[in-house]
Image 1 (cartoon, one colour):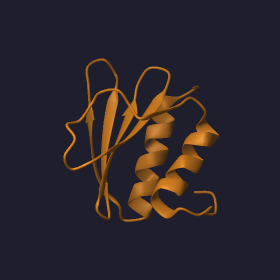
Image 2 (cartoon, one colour):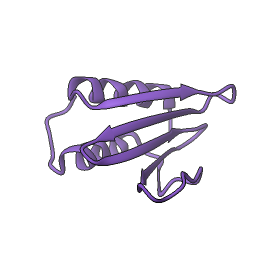
Image 3 (cartoon, one colour):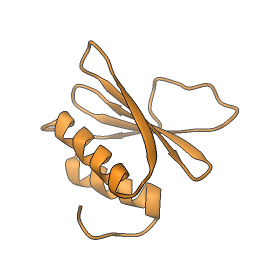
Image 4 (cartoon, one colour):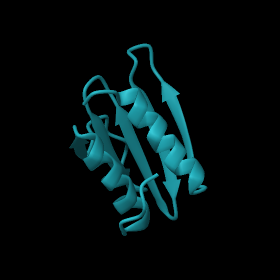
Amino acid sequence: MKNLLEMFDYAVCFLNKNNIKHEYTRFPSNAIILDVWYRDKFYVFHFDTSLIGISEVAENVTFDSRPDKIVMNEDIFKENLKIIFFDVQLDEY
């Protein structure tokens, strides 16, 4: 993936525009973890050196650093945001 920081900024903008609660942590390794609370669900987005990981964390499951899904394409990541949070195709942000 070309620019993970750009995809992180895209995700934060998307969440802000849709009033979805989130917070993030930047690590010395340049990885970023984006925590998102939406309805009764909790998601973790891993922005690492060449990929974005997406995990849905259940109440009774301890967080695992291995993502449930790995995305390596910007367009697929953008579509995943729309599907996860709205389950519909929206206009481009």
